[in-house]
Image (cartoon, rainbow, N blue to C red):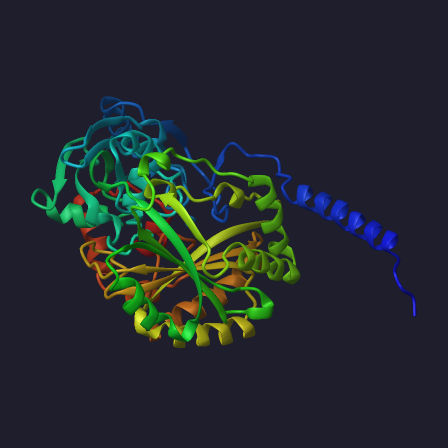
Length: 482
């Protein structure tokens, strides 16, 4: 029998790394860009738009809406464009890019309140409030998104004590299709307050926003590996009932060797063992190239998924502790996930399931995904407390959210293949009194949306009442609201 020498093994490894590096670089080569097309981070809905206008001042935006009215043009509103179903643009529309309307107007440390323009990012907010010992209540895990965009999808976050973003927004100003500016809060134009949160830019331009804050505190993080069957009781008894735990995060394996069976949780305990001043400096992401390379392995190889999970098991060993400030917990590593492959893309899907049904859901999901191939790269599990304030509320009871990170081809054939699988997942989720999140590609049917969101018809009717000429438009509304 032929036995490889150490030299041959080394040569083989070098050859493999070189070949994979070439493949990795090649996968990022772009097709020649067509400036007439616009897309979002998902890159599955490229559309030709009329023009993109950078939002600057209120009067400029008012003039833009007047121009759109005179020329009978539609207007779409864009932030960082991380929704993935054409929510931020429309065919032949004027796209109002709000990322340049981004000033921090005021920080009131006594009221624990910040006022910002809607194009500001959560990072802008963090940098403004960190010196005052303040922190954000609710935001999605990365801090790269705009305030207006986050409101438009009504995000939820890691903090188990605060629900969706709508809970921490006190008030905002909204410019309607006629250019009129409306004050919106729970006591003034309350209906619009419930519509604009999770309203996907269909009711007007969000201007400045008053956001309620909380204290920046120091956490000690601990990791535990648990049986997923025990997760509901573990979470309710050891996490939710423990007042010292503010934040909680968990992951379940998508590696073929342990597919949807192994799971670890990370809890964030408030601690006074160290001084906050020693840890409050805001930290930026590290090891981006290394992590990007490793994650690229899992896109293309099953053994890559096994390797990434093995690395996570080493990094999150039982009992490992870390001291970190709240503001730095809300600055997680995400840049390494940025990916623009030539023939494929990464998409998100998110499903909400009642807390007690988590084990059964995982078992059914494992069976479904084993029979129907889907290139799932990661599943994060988060807790979302009941909140039905927004018209399009996704948490009709206390839920676990399973956030799927998926790699797929961008060809029509690949889109259709994933459509079949994702609709099956949604059907299963609905059967178990669950729901799904709306900011992603329009795989769900209209019937599935109506089943998940009982106020769907009323929401779209309100859209037409507040915007009679349907001036504000996007692909999401075209797909589900027309």
